[in-house]
Length: 130
Image (cartoon, rainbow, N blue to C red; front, side, top):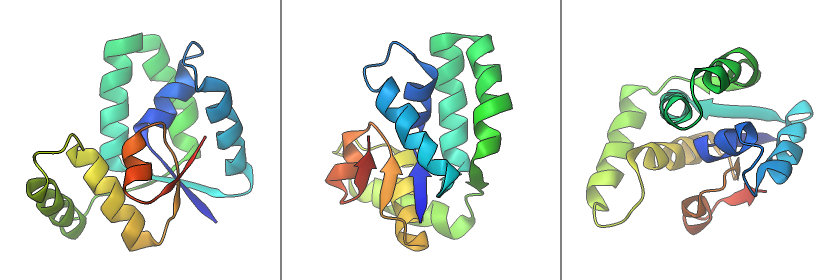
């Protein structure tokens, strides 16, 4: 089985004060028996937020210790265009382009579960951990 990893999950992993931290740590332990996958846009978003929110030390730790544990897929032109189209069609919603990319990626790869705190994943029909 494969678990998709969202930036909300990575950020909760990095923040010990996050209410979901302990549950996210437990969800990441599934990565020992299941593949943990994400895409490049999630990494870009995660590192930008981490540096702004937590500073360079936490950001470096994510680069050195967390990201290498993930299978990071590139966002190809087809995936980007599908996500951009879905984003354009739903501009009135609060769902980001990165999340639209994640949903399109998960559908394309047949992934049903995500390590995500973001409620948009559940609203899109995916199971989330924690």
